[in-house]
Image (cartoon, rainbow, N blue to C red):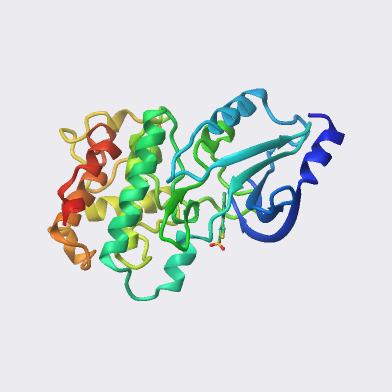
Length: 297
Ligand code: Z3R
């Protein structure tokens, strides 16, 4: 798009307040001057400002406009000039992180179940379209006043990569990353989002207390293995061949996950264990998880 056309299209939106600092840039609330609708504007800042937006990234982003599902934040518009990229998204009232802060103590088990079901419905839809999220966390699960949950930033990781630090130099969290990725696995599959879903499920059931709040890669893996047990060679034969594999002591799993997540029902604990499987090939899929007995309680 030519600079003048970019400015014209930008003028369609009246910028309101800043609502967040995402991985790639700032997020603003804005009003569409043509129909008065409220949207979220995400300014993407790339490392290589000189080079402009890679055409491969733009192609990826254009495909994301086709993802249409009630549990996915709709990408409404893409504005780009040589060096700037602005993504226009459907607006939601708040993110799950802020929601945790607002309900200190406990989240109603029926709300936890409803949020997990909606998370899995959104994931199942994207995974069936071969799109991964790769960076699921409470900040990119958005909720509306009517209790709808929507996943934001789907597919952006593939288009732009996941940097070590955000544009605002905040460190990108490792808390929702599976052990295979922490050990340097480079081939990503849908299983990456299933691990993150398990971490988010446990966090919701624990009123916003993160399950594995690691401070670096080693600390993150140690926390995981101390809870679930260090994987054995028979459980996960491919582990030792991963690029950044490091040996860990042979931790034994905590006998009962209910000690750690006391507010989750026995069926919830069963389902949680199926997300938190270190071997990515043995992790449950979104489609399978939706059929679990936990959702019929
Ligand atoms: C699309 C993409 C990212 C975001 C969108 C929509 N809405 C966001 S972040 C948001 C975050 C809040 S309110 C709206 S917060 O106040 O709860 N941090």
